Image (cartoon, rainbow, N blue to C red):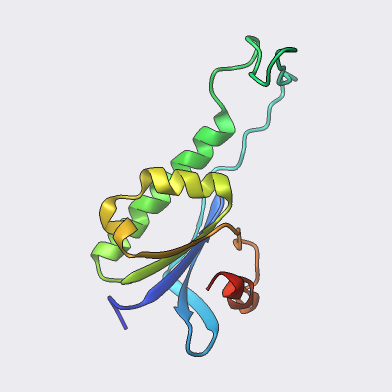
Amino acid sequence: MKGSALWLVTFDGASAVAYHMDRANRRVSPAAFGARDGERKPVYRDGQATTYQSFSTERGAGDPKTDKEREIEDAFVVQLVTDLEAARAEGAFGALIVAAAPRAMGAFRRAAPEALRACLKLEAPVNLVNTPAADVYAAMERYL
């Protein structure tokens, strides 16, 4: 099954889980790739609130120019893509389904190399990281 395996990877900005997808038996099983956990969003103690200009939806000048939470999430997804590409190159899977929240999916699209995108079969806009493995296939059925 090595090299032709179908993997389902579900992730958000701080956690990821990879499964072998068994469509014939309608179930998933954990992949050797395992689960990944990254840094969680920062806790701000300075009390700085996001302000918006009264005449538009742009952030005000008092806001930081970067979004630390997004930087952390993007860095996690870049590392995940690097690990997935290494697993693909070793022949761990031949086809990939990605299920992720929209912001994490965007980071995945920006970071994924062409070789990884070539084996991508489906993108599902759903985060199943905290879903029990027994329920993952049923949650994915509407996208398959």
